Length: 114
Image 1 (cartoon, rainbow, N blue to C red):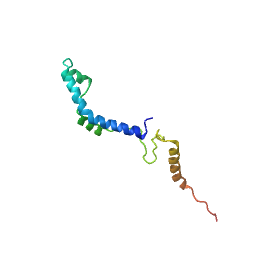
Image 2: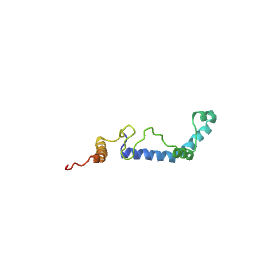
Image 3: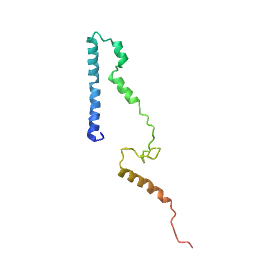
């Protein structure tokens, strides 16, 4: 589930909202910790890491996901010959037909033998 265009758009907008509100939330958290005399900042550092939004965004841009299976971009097959889970059977059949169409040209044309 959750593959529709609407849900993708909502997810994207929630991420934008988080980026926009991150500095305000950080300031609110710091002000709460300053007003509460019982909580020591050192104890909070053990539980959570407080970073500015710019550093978090920089780290997200630098890291990329390590994908175990390598997928051919033209055929969309992985190293085991499997299609992606999101692909439906009609798309699979169409791509398979395209692959097999290119392989059948190796037959020798029959002609008259003299």
